[in-house]
Image (cartoon, rainbow, N blue to C red):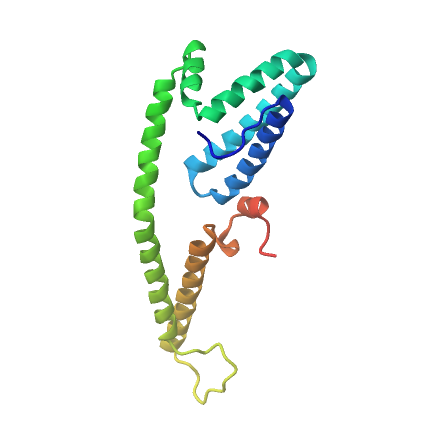
Length: 199
């Protein structure tokens, strides 16, 4: 039994479908770095949009059929039984739902493996960023406004340049860990067009 109130009329179903499509569209951005979840939400958004249009057309041109369909869908949702009817319809239309289930299970297994490895990967990258930051602090800072009695030696200049590079790399890595995206300064022109500027 579902815990939410299920739609009962064609109009209510149309609203629910469009709302689900809108929610799914926002979930695409939340899962932008997870290919399988991103694609699943993309399909959900498209499916909700198409289903809402189809049901609204049916409501306008065949209201009796639309009412019967809404009643049938309400009963299925109230019982929490969609897998069975969906499977039977797919079979009746000569699709292969067993293959879909197999592929889903394979993707689910990959997601579990990825999630299990994710905390270790984040911890390792965080440690790497910390080490780069420490290396950045170990070199003399010639970028300030202080006055130097002696001109920096080539070795000291090299240390400063390496420290600057380490500091920038650490900052970039922390930005990736925080946002899940490539920092703007490292984006290609195509990526900048897609994501916009830092401002």
